[in-house]
Image 1 (cartoon, rainbow, N blue to C red):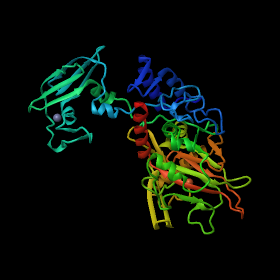
Image 2: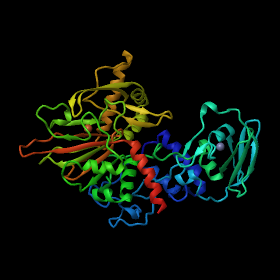
Image 3: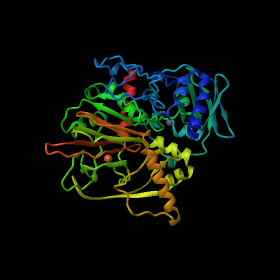
Image 4: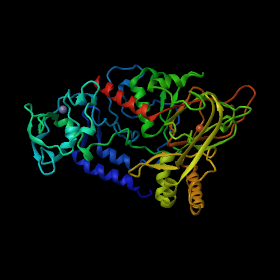
Length: 491
Ligand SMILES: [Fe+2]
Ligand SMILES: [Zn+2]
């Protein structure tokens, strides 16, 4: 097995540090995850998992969510443990809506409060000797009193422009119930913070946001693709939650048994929020056309790509509903995990990774479709990193890569060499997952991660391959997941 990439080592180190607690109770009721098993499974996320392609129970041998059962049970236990087959983590948001409202009682977690006058900080001494500092300017900015914070809009009412950045407290004291701290400010104002609230927002020690910083399960040709029944996802919140968490962690899942007619993506997308339209309409029909305005509308093979590379904001999630499939051979969908292969490239050829993550290609699309004439144009590095150097999206599109390449001349050939290498690694048989969709299947995948393509197919006169495609945005998916998590856990 290859050596672990740096980011994975950092995650494991972090887990090892945390593992002293034996178990981390992520915001109480949401999920209890055994860190020992988390660490063990994290070690193998670069390795494909044994193949099961059949549309079996979506939850495999993972501990099922009761709410996802076909009976639509009412008691929902939102706990997905790590196991040999399941590597999906369910973490809580940093602080729940109840916590925001301050209505949840918490066990006392502190032994003392004090002030660091020189550094203008509140000091909270936790049992066990841990101390945490909270700058006064930040505390005043986040005062939870009704004058400063609207309790139902859950929104700050004060302004940054009027903030006294040098503010300090006159005194601090434990609240009468010993569950928090009262700060008496120099100007006579008074703030109250619960220790639970302070702990949830303890700066760099705050736990990561599971949706902004998701844990990815990598996959390859042998992926055990998870399937979710269309009707269940439509009717059952537990099933909806499980489908969406799979999209977060693995970035690909199939929804099965949808009716074989157009319009189903509106129903499925409506369970999240709304579809993201494009120049090709609210949804688009993938059929071979006589005068195609897009290569998708031919019967030829399509190289691995991400959709809408020519948009500045490329759609987050793609859904492809198989309404009719080509007879005989051909027409298979091909998928490759762009994140997994990007990490492989970083390990194998750091310079290629550097070039692809720093020099952008440009993309264009010109034509006329649903909303009239359009001319889309954008610029993306093949591998986009965030401010911490983590891969957040990949953009690859042979058919819409524009000739414009505003790169230093001496870097052009090395850049193409890097692109060529990345594409070949994506196409390595170990990395390509082939899936011939059946009528009623809806392939759903992270459009900024799971590259997709198709083999050529034969067009017959008696109809043929017909897919309806549509998009969702990650903001809507993450929002739905947060709301679902709160709802399901309050039952
Ligand atoms: Fe596509
Ligand atoms: Zn206030």
